[in-house]
Amino acid sequence: MVRSRGQRPANPSMRHGPAALRDFPYPYVAALAISCDPDDLRNREDFLAVARFLNTTGETAMGPGLGLETGYGFWLYDACGACDFTLFQGVSSQRSSNAQLIEDLIESGHLDFIHGYGDFSEGGFERRHAEQGLEYLAARNLRLQVWVNHGGDRNTQQIGRLPEQRGDNRDAEEYHTDLLLAYGIRFAERFEIIHTVGQDASCNLSDRLKQTVELLLYAVRTGEWKARSLFSNRLLGILRLDDGQLVYAFRRFGGKRRGLRRAGSEELPELISKRVLDELQAKGGYTIIYTHLWRNRERPAVLPQQTQDALRLLADRHRRGRICVTTTKKLLIYNLVHNHLAWEMDNTGSDLAVRIGGVDEPLGGLRIPTLEELQGVTFYTPRPEATRVYLRDREIRSAVRNPPDHTGLKSVSIPLTRQVFPQKYCL
Image 1 (cartoon, rainbow, N blue to C red):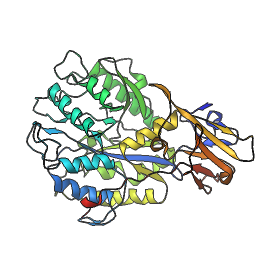
Image 2 (spheres, helix red, strand yellow):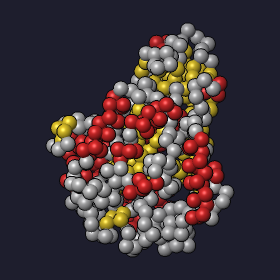
Image 3 (cartoon, helix red, strand yellow):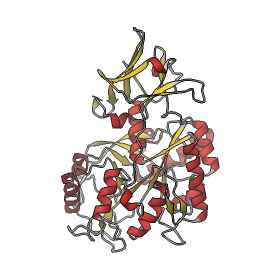
Image 4 (cartoon, rainbow, N blue to C red):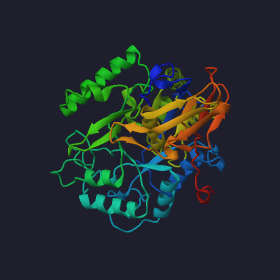
């Protein structure tokens, strides 16, 4: 049984007989997620103005929608009184007027990560907020797998190594990661912005220099001088929390210049510029974009023109089958499954059979994935028409046969499933 480890198809460890595991879903050569935090989002109208432009194909305030698959973070609470696009009113237990919209978008996959429990930039977070919020979500089977810290020295709900990141410290009043992981969070942002284009890809000298600087800065801030493995160019690593629990850790791309840390909508065009997208495609890597689309010096409900134009160019790359644009959650799951897929090729009969045994994860070992987790997985095969794909002993009848890609090779895929923005919010 072959255990994949994210190498190129030419590597023998990715092959079994005549088959090989393709790096990205057919026909893409790279993958990107726009990971949008809710900072500076004020209300429902502002959220929907941006989401309709990005996620639908209808007419919007910014012209025809792009129909991209992008996801957003959300808050359960707002302790600062500046935002009503939260699950609860303020820090109470009362559902907000936007609770149903938020719940619907969690179900559709468009709200795909928890950006902390809320905006506690003036302090005040307590464990009870985590208990109430996670119990509410679990009771409605609203399961999220991705956590992204909300920054600021007084947002002590954060998890990690910095002094203000107290949420994973068992002795702290803010401790909550026992609840968080029991609820279902599997991926946590490292809260350190990366400046290298394309993870799980080759690095040039400039990339290596930037990574060395990032390592030194991180070590100075945290006192962790043995953290080098955390600063490899892998998309996913393993983070040991202060309470001893383990989660998959990832970092987001914040541009090649440190002046982009504001990460507002005006900065997004540089993060998805032609130069960056060309480099991402050439490297064949993954990138998760760090941004705040509602952090806008102009009208908060409308993205600046240069940002709209940049997003249209990105959408064109996606439509032309070059860069797979998806949500943070789906990109992380695909990367994890692809890099640790256990599979083999059976070519003893007239047909070829790709048999997936499971996902041999670093945390938890071998398990059987769902079909949803396998979407996009693609195998090169010389005879797609005669190749069948199985999950253990069950044939995946939805598998799609693909013509030759840019390498000239044919393949068979487990199809991608598109997320559909709820129609009632498209008007």
